Length: 294
Image (cartoon, rainbow, N blue to C red; front, side, top):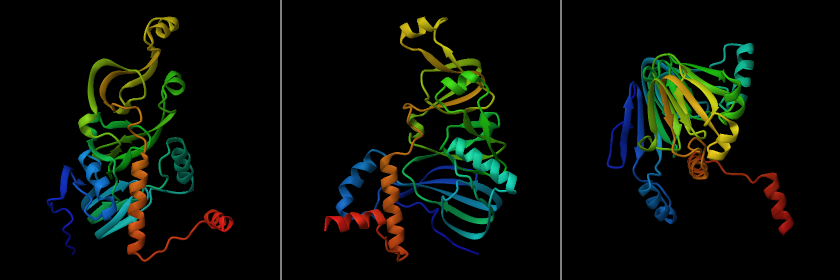
């Protein structure tokens, strides 16, 4: 039996979203920052650049998470890989190369609390029931999902979407029932949710970060002719047709990792290394460079 106060809210730690067993924790300020960085951290928090974590409370249940994302866990939890054999490993390696996703996605089973590493991205919790049970996401968004959700690599259904869509030839599809957790550079308040009922959505650019698998995705001209499309200045557009849901980001790079996120994670890792008593060693290139300068 374990006891943990991690899910208890404080003046600085808030649970900003909760669905099922998933809890999104947000820290209003970085209270543990070095004094020399206090001004930077203050203004960053005022712009909603804050540290967030996903905490998952399991009760005789199971979940799948992005490889390497676990920070700590408590309770009777068992960990297994999502690899079922040599052939399955080969398929997942190919799928990981095509979608830039981690090959190994650990599966945690049992009763306990699992906390993932902090991030400066925004964590979105989505119920697959709202996506007709199948959701295609932009590469790099996946963070975690219920155990009943299957993770697959799918190919574009049309040649135009493969070649001209700027969305990649392959994507990650989440299939089944349950909650999925996604990472986004854009907060939910700025994302645009569009529900189509036998209708059409046209998007000039790769702004869609998630869409229902039931929608047909093609790339089409804005006018009847290519010349007319060029003259209009719009050219080709991504078209989502049918019944389903599309999640749009206001900026095309809303999925990509930012330099700030990398920098903050480097600082977080350095802090963990200090706590564990590890010392950073200079790389061979750094050592050679210092020798030459002397």
